[in-house]
Amino acid sequence: MIVGSTLGALKHMDTETAFSLLQELGVKTVELGVGGYVDTTHANPKVLCHSGNAVRRLKEQLEAHDLRISALSCCGNPVHPDRSVAAAHHQDFVNACHLAQALGADTIVSFSGCPGDSASSKAPNFISTRWPDDFQTVLDWQWERVLIPYWREAAAIAASYGIRRIAIEMMPGFCVYNPQTLWRLRDEIGSAIGATVDPAHLIRQGIDPATAIRALKGAVFQVHAKDLLFCTDARNENGVMSTDSHASPFSTRAVGNGHESAYWRGIVKALSDIGYDRSLTVEYEDDVVPINDGLPLAVKAVMKLL
Image (cartoon, rainbow, N blue to C red; front, side, top):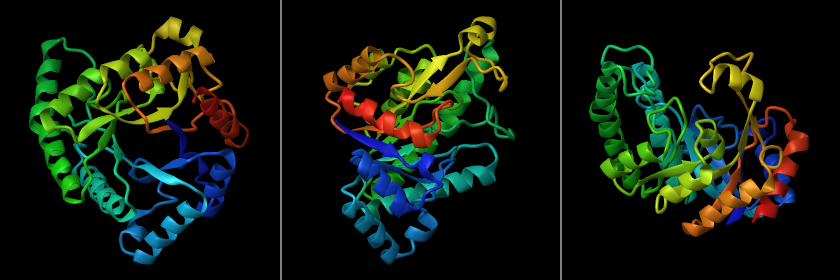
């Protein structure tokens, strides 16, 4: 495994400056944001997909800073019940596949998305329990009528561009949010579907990341290095499902600012045990420490783990 980084937290920097900083920190791979809800400052497909010179320039910048692409991130909701949102995020996915082919990248990171509860819905409906029975009816409709057909088509589109690694980021709010739902989608679509493991999203649900990683053996395509700590008072009072932005039960932290190193060594060991040998990608979203101070420390902490 090697250390990588996403670029979202560096959107205030131009590409040259961001790459120079990452090289200085010892980062070896980058996950470039290309669409959906993800910032596209450093790899805008609307520019790159229509300009061979721009693609060539980006490749030269990567090479000059000894960086490789671990993945392109296009995390959106292509099954959103608002057809305009769904269409825009689907086009972002197609553009991501086109750009991945041009850049020689092999992995697209995405969310599974979340539909509404019926064909007439206006907003997504995330179901987190099987009862009352209405919820199971909605789940069946979401998966059988929307999610599976969409990703079957999307995987075929990706394959037409030579992309056979779609790394679904498991996150609450979307239909694929844990190992069980990831395997359900992979079993339906095939080996092109894999997981992006972000321990913060798993910890938030009460999932042990190391256990989840072992359950995902053979299907881990990308890993984000990001931590999460619960705010004990808020969690004890209102649990982990609170939507109160002023009293969140958790805080996103960088590696090194959250759980102790032994906890993270267990995560890295689990990755090693399942044969994962790609990037451990720092996704800097620390709620407390500013990026200028925190990113170097986070990269250093990940390097120590490796």
